[in-house]
Image (cartoon, rainbow, N blue to C red; front, side):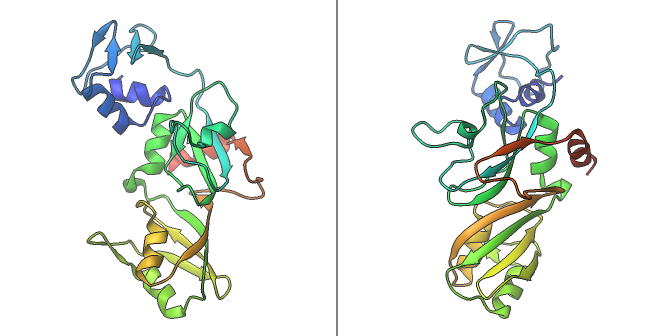
Length: 229
């Protein structure tokens, strides 16, 4: 197994972050620093360490759905700040699939499965993410059409979205991409201001009636459906 995939499958980080750790010399295999990309290890035979801490593969893939409250960072390590892992009391290490910014709420998936993480974050898999958006002021049909057709952000037009109006100030939007603070930036470009943002769906997983701050394990059927896409 490639070393970066081993680290991701062990729940240490994403594959991309694993590559960064390897290049930076943080990873040892059988006592020797490995910094060459493409290096392979034999799970259960080779001894892998990250900054001196042993790394092993989990016995079972874990995937969790969390209703993230506002005020929490979608990160595994932010000293002095509230992070989403503070809300999950399990011994296994999991990490977020994608992000929700500190002020946003709603569905956040966390896993120790590197393949599942890749499938849900890589743009080639084209997974949908659905949000409920509340603005400070009323929004016109013209602006909603602009948001739906695409907004120029950082020199690149956003992909077409699907929008349904819920009230003069509220709408639902479905995206197939995940740029940093994308919805807030899109709304700001049209002269508006987001006051509340809640994610209600990632691919086929819905937030449903999961209470804020609570979490649940995904069922085996839900995990299999995610991997099929």
